[in-house]
Length: 94
Image 1 (cartoon, rainbow, N blue to C red):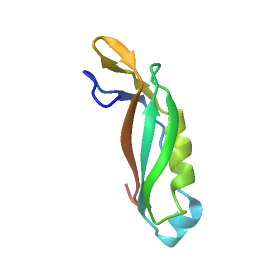
Image 2: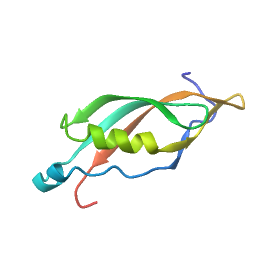
Image 3: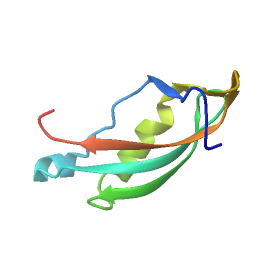
């Protein structure tokens, strides 16, 4: 579904765990996902579309997103599955 009247919104977001090795080395970065939020507001599919640096943050970011809960997207008053893009950033000192 490309168009919705009301997009899904995060209701419950747990923070991603910063990898200890990346923290110790001062590495910062991000991971961008394409995720499918189903009619119940559950992340039912997620795919990494971009990350920097590659191979560092994908696992912790994926684990965090799988636990997020959303309000369902709506189309014509009915809950629908919606694919969205979400970026998680990993920054030290924040």
